[in-house]
Structures are given as structure tokens and as C-alpha cells.
Length: 83
Image 1 (tube, helix red, strand yellow):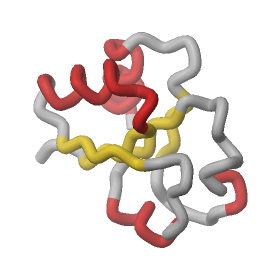
Image 2 (cartoon, helix red, strand yellow):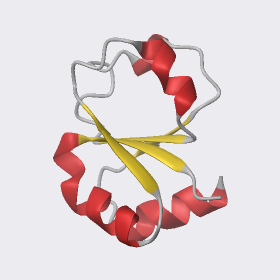
Image 3 (cartoon, one colour):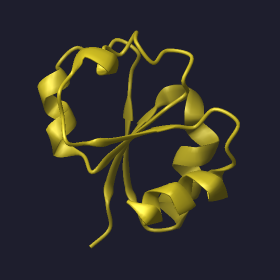
Image 4 (cartoon, helix red, strand yellow):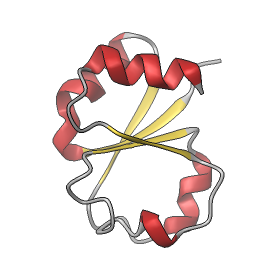
């Protein structure tokens, strides 16, 4: 079963790549306010620039967070596979 990925809107190149590779990818906004919805995803991919704007730093969750700063779409996929 493909992992369900939440990804920031600025990472459209990574979003498109992961969709082509068969992942279920949904875009999240910087104003992502309902942090409880994070549990609906296997992985959240962020830019790193807005790490705390999403409020992720203060959320207790079992969801894996990938900071895609400096990563290629391939690198992000490899990180997802290792989880």
C-alpha cells in the first residue's frame, strides 16, 4: 500500500514526482490549522522555511516529518522508503 503524504504547496516538483511514483499526495497550506489531521498521513514533507509556522514543532505526533531543504525529489522518496 502506498504511503499517504502531506506536502507543502511550495514543493510542487516533489509532489508531482511522488504522485508519478504511486504515492497518495495531498497538499497542505502554511496555515494548516487542524494539527490533529496530521495523524491521517504517514509522512509530512515541509520546506523547512516554515517549520514552526505549521506549528509542527509543538505537536506530539507519530507522523514522520521530512525537511526537504536541499533535497531532490529522489532524495525525498529515498527518505520516505527508509521510514
